[in-house]
Image (cartoon, rainbow, N blue to C red; front, side, top):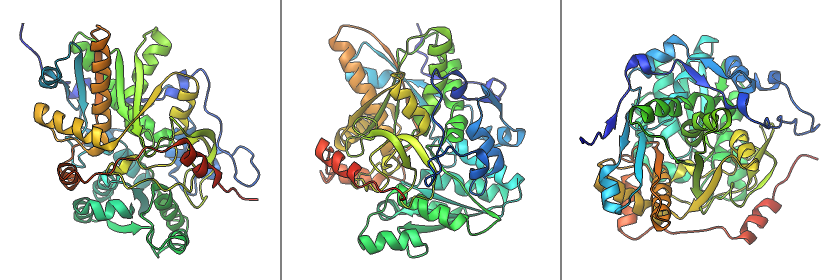
Length: 453
């Protein structure tokens, strides 16, 4: 029998709606709170920061949301994205498991982030905005938003976490090429940035600080809005096109996954690949395990606390129900910059609390080892973030082999690593430091959380 390696969809087969998991969750996420009164806030409280349409999507409980035609037209440049059977990796591992991966690195930004950057820019332009501010960790989100804003005629200011700004110069240049202004965070351009630098002049930055700077800048101008590349419900909503396509592609492969895996920073790519399969579990009785892999140095899901916390370091966001290490937490300088976030989105947090998804941790050297094995067998050099999902898939295949069980494993390769080759150089030089947070370090981080009086 011929080995079919690549599973494609036609333009006509591409989903025309995003899937909203909230409609099928047995326990709906808790509401965001006003940090002063501790009372639930309504959507109107978010509209001075976010596009009104995005706020509607944020609080929606409708099962499906139509994708605008203008967004579909841009999606068609790179979607539907391919799904591959990883025959060569299977051979290298000597596994009896079947490994499939959804590849999201084939678009202009090189990652899944384009799936939400395009609609976010579209809605803001439609509502008359002139400028967008945002943060970026490793630069994938900033790159995605840069082109989307350029396409729709919006100015973009990106606060890039300083350690990634220094580690990944080509990401900055990519954003500049698309017309964006990129500022290393923490910076002297905002009160939040100056406060972080006063506390630590050598602060490497964090996504929490960068978010604070971007929000602070946005709220000063009525023609400027803020956008976020992960964590929030509407971001997860847009990313579900990944999993919906994967469901159709698994059907073309005449197969179905026992396990679906994605890496975890704030939750966007894991939510995108897993939520449509979660619906099959909840509605149609499927039994797929949904597993996410996070860094051992930033283990909010596996060691953090489920509580209300700020989504940013300066406390400019509402209080959100999440697994968190504390909004003041500054993670280690791992090269998977997109995974260096203190908290988890409210949707995956609630789902983990309810036992509907699973989480594990990995050290970065082991993930780079997996990324290199993947590159040498499957030809794609994965982003450092994606290597966590690859490492998780390899681990699950080995466990199944030891148990004498053949499993079908689907994982999300959320982006390529061609702009992260300096990170691979550090790996080959044996110059990557592993760090796993101890329980004592987690307790110390959580003890530093300060809320308004």
